[in-house]
Image (tube, rainbow, N blue to C red; front, side, top):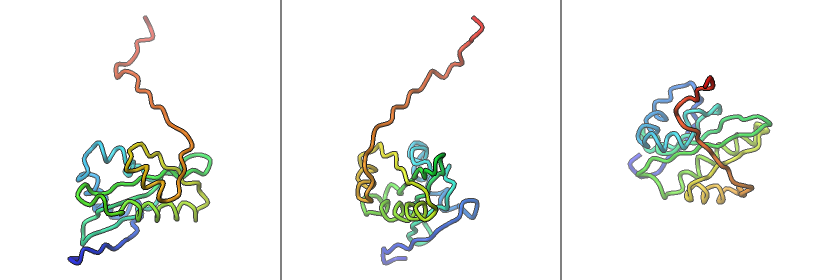
Length: 139
């Protein structure tokens, strides 16, 4: 749409995900990986501008009825509350499914969106990466 308005649509995982795939490529490998969108088990909630997907969210079902949120906005579309719109749709879907939404918001911008949707910080996460070289346990 040339008016600058966006329309939202839901795209089931496994369907025609070319728009979501294009968003992941456009955002770069690091941001796409951080978003976790490639691993969602829910439908993808997409916001389009014309035929281009400019924001997407979904969640991956984790043990104990947890819905781990994934959100990504195209680099040139950030700062317009699009993450809030798609994340809100994914959260509503998770709640309707009886799941507890969880958001690992490491980046400050992500933390602001999570807070705007009512998420509360309950702790921190520590990730430790062991060396890439396999350990020879025979010596």
